Image (cartoon, rainbow, N blue to C red):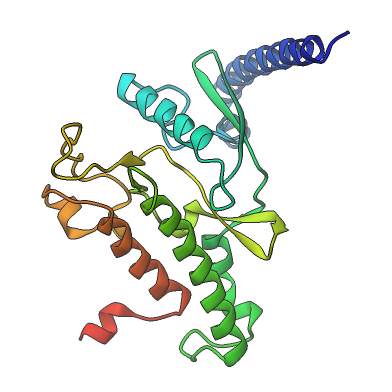
Length: 247
């Protein structure tokens, strides 16, 4: 049996397993409805929550625009084979549910930031000690390098959804690096003013907490909107209250 025949057989087995899993999901939904009728609402809720594990922010089903964004994100991941971006392996569609196989990243920056005070044994109002400060500098440096990589491409890519949840911690550290960019569903290419292929970027795209003013207001914007998000992420990493400092 050739290598490609083996790969094809594995692919067929994978599709069969996914089909079986989708059937199980339907049975769980029916069972949840039976639990509801029997007054076992908590059990029904647990079954429905199990169905939601692994679903993306677009949910199980999405409209044509949502599908276009998902396929665009997959295309970007396939093209961006870099140490700065989470590795893409494969993707497949079963019963209108898109699954994406990527490099395993056990944590994201948000999970780390939630526990920094516990890890470094300090109170929330206390300043960072020297060790935490230098570690924060290393983390932020790696984030900047990741985004710099996108902005130096030809044409540059605007991520448009930079936030701690999308900054992934690689399980296998390579060459001392452990931060990688994820979630390219909203990423877009940016073309110069004199480029005939240039189009106006969509307004109000991304997480409102990290969205630059020019994006929310509908004005024309470029890769610098990512820099705005980086500043807010940096403030979280170094535990700086921007609102307090502005006052």
